[in-house]
Amino acid sequence: MKLASAYYEGVRRFGVVVEDEIALLPPALGTLDDVIRDGTLDEVRAASERTPHVPLNEVRLAAPLQRFNRDVLCTGWNYWDHFEESRGKREGQDPVERPRHPTFFTKGPDTVIGPYDDIAYDGSLSSKWDYEAEVALVIGRDGRSIPESSAWQHVFGFCVANDVSQRDLQRAHGGQWLKGKSIDATMPLGPWITTSDAVDFAGLRIQCEVNGELRQDALAKQMAFPVERLIAELSSGMTLRAGDVLLTGTPSGIGNARDPQVFLAEGDVVVTRVSGLGELTNRLVSRAA
Ligand code: MG
Image (cartoon, rainbow, N blue to C red; front, side, top):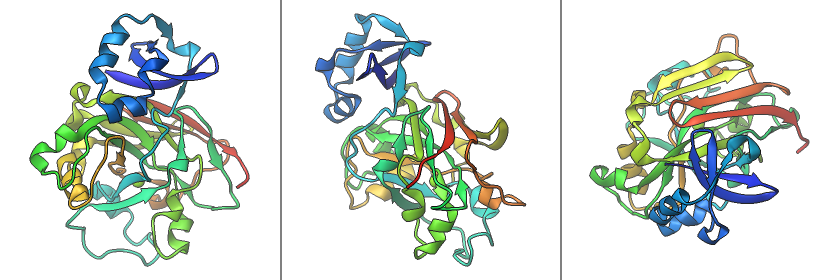
């Protein structure tokens, strides 16, 4: 099942996407955030079967989630080809060895924008705007110290994200990943959440295009640490809650690691695509910070 949030006649609703239509569900069912927290997917499924459909082109899709428990959880260096491509390009902040455990960080929820919204670009904040196509995972069930063997029971579904980053802000403030990952209105999320029962995870193909040029192209099965491992290690001693979003890392091909380096600029159009999960299209439009 594909679940989307959308504006229809000016009101935010949520619904079930079926091909190029959406069944907009009655407001009494709450929001998509409520459905995930309250575990009411069966009610949603039943209601969608008796709800008339509206063509998708009559709504404006929004980010599927709008009420975050906390920062968006993120994974760094989860494709070894991406880890290797950046060797010597981290301005003195290189680890020597491949990490033996997943690398985690967070980004602020004010980064989140809809699947076709503009990315709020400000060249005065950073001169190194970069793209990172990723699969985003949505937690569907609270858990702490979740073993790998039951990790999938805590996954509600998946969507597409672009972890747009400002490389110089990552370096300038102590070699952290928060500030260079948390500029407002820079992370497209969507276009909808596909429930995990409808996803063949290993077969997912992640791609990023900038102005029509393919820059990233990889399979989810190339991940250094699989989903089970990410959930087990992240939840170890730390509760994950329904509605939490975890980005699973970006593959190689980022602008910072290219020779010569190439960064995003005003007017660029970024397409982020994951086979089976959908596609985001976002233009960088100037907005003063
Ligand atoms: Mg990333």
